[in-house]
Length: 245
Image 1 (spheres, rainbow, N blue to C red):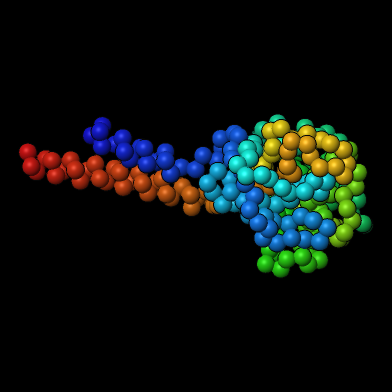
Image 2 (cartoon, rainbow, N blue to C red):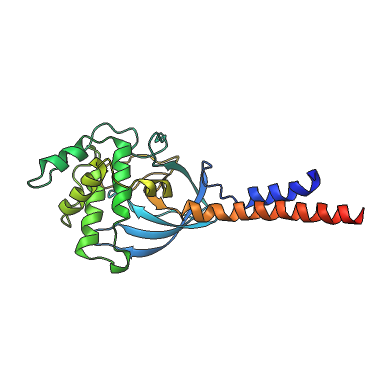
């Protein structure tokens, strides 16, 4: 019995993605859709898994050399943001939505985790198949505004962010909003990332990004299925051995 369960346990560990390990190998591959003024979505490899990554830092360009390492941070409540680019920020650019002080105040009162969560929510609202349209550009502008530290100055005004800012604020302020998707997101941050001044590229680092991972429930079926298969195999072998003896 003991000998037979070891292979099953080994398979369980082998096929469970180790995406919580820090740091992890990260490689960008190709843009899936690019937006006016920069930003948008890009395909990348996180470890051995293909993921979608999204621009959150207007001040720096997405570019990652092969086999680069990065830290991963989760977005659920209570997450540790000590490895992130904006996690220690306490000062942000003031958001002003024309004629909407309530939603503006919701964003301005939010801390770093809330801002990352609002950015992830807006990522889920992209019309990725539509490319650089006014709607997608507005979402990107809103993400940049939400994650704009006071040291940056105002994010580029290449699209109207107000509708997307209102959408994000209302989702964040609504206690009945769906937040389950947040478990599908991680923040990808370079452990050696440093600030090099507005308009200048990062030194020894790359632009921080949000990544949307495959559904955890779908991933979980693989090791669960292998574990069941292993247990079933043990029972079959034991019954066969019992008959023979």
